[in-house]
Length: 220
Length: 292
Image (cartoon, rainbow over all chains, first blue to last red; front, side):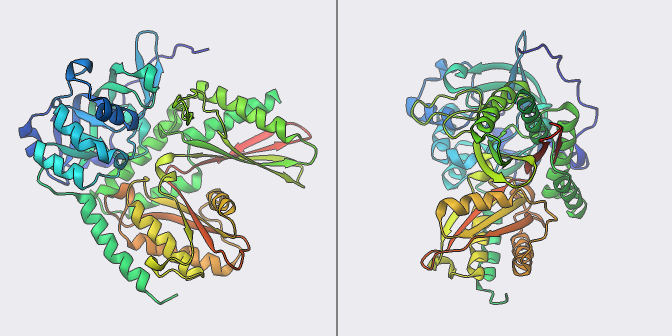
């Protein structure tokens, strides 16, 4: 059934729309603590290097089974854990990422702080932001939350240069496996930093004030 | 049925890889309106590039190809059972061919069926129609936005929401405030009001099939839809939830009669990737047309 399809042609040079007109910080993986501390809420970054995907099942597995680092086929130290359940196609030699946007990060809030502490991850990437517990862990262990663009799965998949490996594919399935992806020029916005600042908190607070007014409004 | 099956695979492809023209043009307008260099404008530029990239390469524009939800209107005399099994077969083929992400997970074994079929999966609603055409609407409902939907039982004291349309408005605002950016705004919002829990959840989802420029036939509701949409935009949550002028692409309200004791309000939210497509199948000629 599955026919051989050549890889997609490389992106046209200079793609990226409005990202071109913003000053972006280049982020090379693995990251150091110093790299993390150079990032602040509002910074636009462009990511290069190896990162891993992980969503609901991987988080509960790491949290409940607590596998030692040697049992994970990739050194998570300094890397980015990307909340993403991609569509991946098997090719004769390897795999190809067809679509790979972020999933809602808040669902793994109860596990993330422990995972950051235990595995030395320096970046969490997803969408929608995370809560107090994670924000605290970012500060304590030196890590940032990167917000990428929800739904932009084709655009983001085209910034995956190579699928370097996969863990737990059989057990968890395509969407939930840990994929090791080599990315280039992968865009994200820092929305929670290692200094305790969260853009999500700010927007929630501001919108909460407006909501109060709207609920009180008697004009109809 | 073989031809119909293949046509449903094409319906899947259309829904997964392209957005309805009304949604695309709303997003384009939004990009022009947002402040240059703002998070919202940045995100919208990527979103627009993503939409055209998906069409060009015929790939799903979002990796979450969602829960497929079918609303089928069947002319008298056509077997509902047969339609159902054709949809299921088409789903298996579409998952492999397009490909879609396998999303159907067994509650007891936690195993993914790998072909997007399972108990109650995909969701299929079938109604009989007096019309001569078979009409199939398909919505690919991403779960980021499905998870932020809410069901309210009015009155709700916490919101001071009484059992009237003012109360309904408060419920919608509460849902969007609680959702913030978690479900990929700007959102399209479907509201269903009525007597029974199961009925209003379907009704709210059905509202998401209406085009953005569709005008509610009840002037009171039409006004309310506009009002709530403006209110949502004043929350300032913005595209992808990082601030901005627009959080709602539209609010659509549907009503049923209610019981004197009940006033249920259900809110279904769609992300900006509002994937819907329609197939109209002429029973006489077996010719069909797919549009979105």
